[in-house]
Image 1 (cartoon, rainbow, N blue to C red):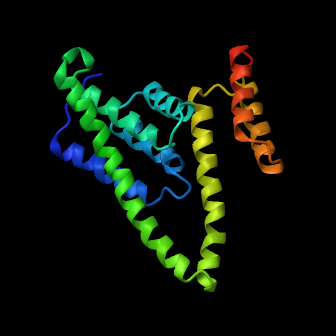
Image 2: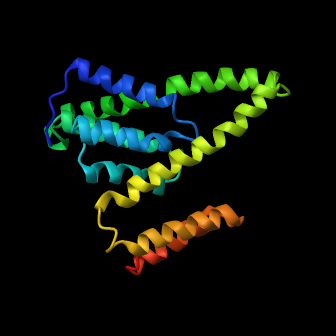
Length: 198
């Protein structure tokens, strides 16, 4: 896919991710449905498979979960630069593509988190601070469910993918009701996938 992005498109890319940064309570992954809407549905800068591959690869790799934003930017930049076969131009555009959304997603939330955490720590006994912390929990859970829904239903074949839905439900219940470490669940999912069960 070859894209022709103007300076206004790049600025829009930055501002979209800067706005999403302020909604990313619980991590950048909670805003993945809106990133999908913007990058795949509205702008057509990424394909469905590129989008889901970015999230899957970043979540499988060690490190912060915000890496999927860098991969999305890499793919947008690579598409705008003509691909890797375009040589240094393609590579430079891919690196620029990494920089734009990463700055957008990191600067506002990092600044707000620093200021809010500092204020919240100084005023931790106030009723409003305690209420805010309790009120944010359902929002984070709802955003994570929306992200999971988007990733699981990407193929739009629920009848065929029932083992995947069942695995998602079982993992959700295990995380909610037990103290089992998430790495065990990831390992179990990898084994089930390796045997072709999901």
